[in-house]
Length: 109
Length: 117
Figure 1 (cartoon, rainbow over the protein chains, first blue to last red):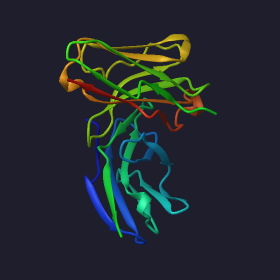
Figure 2: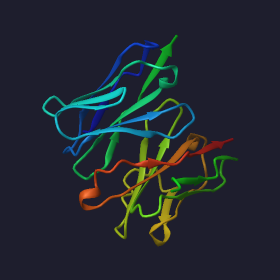
Figure 3: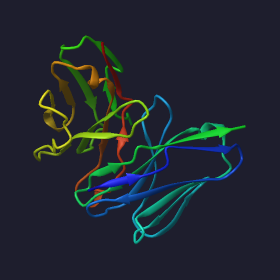
């Protein structure tokens, strides 16, 4: 079956670095997406990886290892506004997104 | 340009009533998705429209749920004889799709928060 696993909740301190992991098993693979979702709001696109390695985009970076079925989202210099849920989604062979349940990130001062 | 627009933003109705939710995708986006999200949960795929192709209805939870997309643009999701377990946020997303655009990110509307009393 198809499955996406990510931690339910994480806590980090303002100014620090946090890594949110995601493992996936999908029928075929056409890339891995990360979305951010603030409470009560729609998900917004953060990153897309289809090749192995690290993609850096400002304070956020995303990593992919296709052989391990593994990705992580790295958030640096955490700000209070980064408190949100982070959704991992793998695109299968039919170009459909299989979504994880999301990781709720709590930032403390 | 305008993003994905959904209406109503909130809907409260009694159990057993029918409801209709509307989604207006980004102009030019050929792919349209409906998802359901319960409190604290991930996104549950409901249905996918791509151009003029037959929709992928594999995620619809029961025959009380149906959706249509007229003219390749606006879509409506209809839930008949609503049940309390239908209470959730219903999210619509659109994307460029087809060929080299298949890996484009989905852009989400703000959702309709549906509450069944």
